[in-house]
Amino acid sequence: MHLSKRWIVLLAGFYLLAGAAAPLRPQEKFDNFKRGQARDMLRGVADNVRKHYYDPTFHGMDMEARFKAAEEKIQNATSFGQAFTAIAGALEGLNDSHTFFLPPPRPYKLEYGYEHAMVGDACFVVAVRPETDAATKLKAGDQILAVEGYRPTRTTLWKMQYFFNALSPRQSVHLDVRSPEGEVRKVEVVAKTRQLKRVLDLSGASDADFWQLVREGENEDHLLRQRYDEFGDKLMIWKMPEFDMTDSDVDSMFGKAHKFKALVLDLRGNPGGAVTTLDRMVGSVMDHDVTIAKRVGRKDLKPQLAKTRGSSAFAGKLIVLLDSRSASAAELFARTVQLEKRGTVLGDRSSGSVMESRHYPMQVGTETIAMYGASITDADLIMADGKSLEHNGVIPDEAILPTAADLAASRDPVLARAAELGGVALDPAAAGKLFPIEWKSLN
Image 1 (tube, helix red, strand yellow):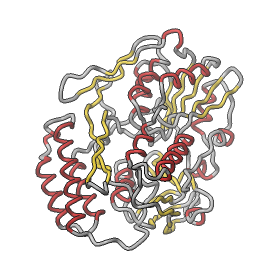
Image 2 (cartoon, rainbow, N blue to C red):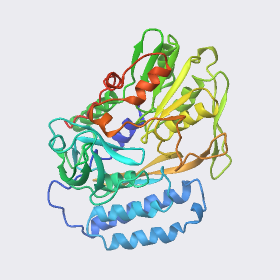
Image 3 (cartoon, rainbow, N blue to C red):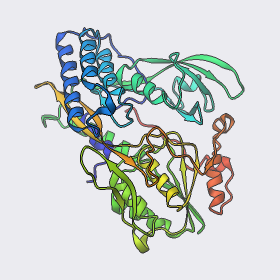
Image 4 (cartoon, helix red, strand yellow):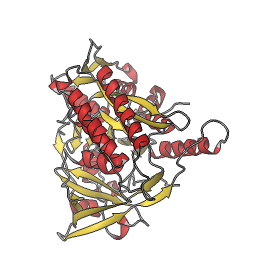
């Protein structure tokens, strides 16, 4: 069975929470035993960064001083949240989108019931889940002015999410929001929660915990399935959630696309994924081999090359959609399309989170094991124009941003424009109904 990146993360025991949360019971005392565990985690992360980070000079950063400062902070910490923040802070100085600490999972699942994203330079609520506390206080199109007093920007939003979601979660979040009509208000959104077992038994004595993980993986895979719609013989619209497909799955999707004169590849919200999937995707739209990027690391590395699928490659009109959440492989694909003059890119400037990294799982403990890990960059990627997309992103050929009113009414002007370029008349309201949001189950 093909295991997606998210499956591997899940089975390894890692997850980042869907929203900020607080412990559902009083915190246990942060004693010397727990402090020792946190120190061991720091040392594990530090050792792997020393060995594997692509730049052995760490951009001139004194990482040993940062690790020492983090150890001192752990010594004075009064909770795991403070200790985890110290570990993450040691890596933050690298300013690297793909190098970060993955703390142990929390013993509960929760969801705030809303999704938010940067649209241009402003942060908006883009969807709200029914039957949640958020549904009584927020609506799509609300602009988020502050989260716990901090203003979200393209630079800070992911750091805020990482802090509140993974490092130091809390049970409710305070927002300053402005409605599409201009009303400014303060709201507190409380998470919908489900308590989990603190210890999972995967020894084989009981199958319950194992099959719970399997069910969660299956639910995740369902949410991440490839979705598409067809319009006569003119246009196929493909909503691709992430770059995590086998070669045969990629070939199957492009086999469908061959029937149409134009293809809209919607990479909005796509966080990237596997290098192999990216290579196959690029090779499936090019009539010649393409060097996607030069890889710069500790040693000489082969460039990332996508081999054309030849006569099997899609030769029709290609339109690629991006937004601020399009990252990594999604950005590399779109920029390659631009540089090769193979298609048109529409939407918003992408995330600018483009490095090549590897996940390093680690653990502390013997009888009771705490799983943690780190993502560590092992190569910088330089495009054919001699530039890196890290912190820059892909600038679309045609910038199209939904307004607050569009978000409130579930209109999608970006997809409507893409359909128009593909020869199909599709109004923004109809475009907004093609791929409705699906919420992750808490069960």
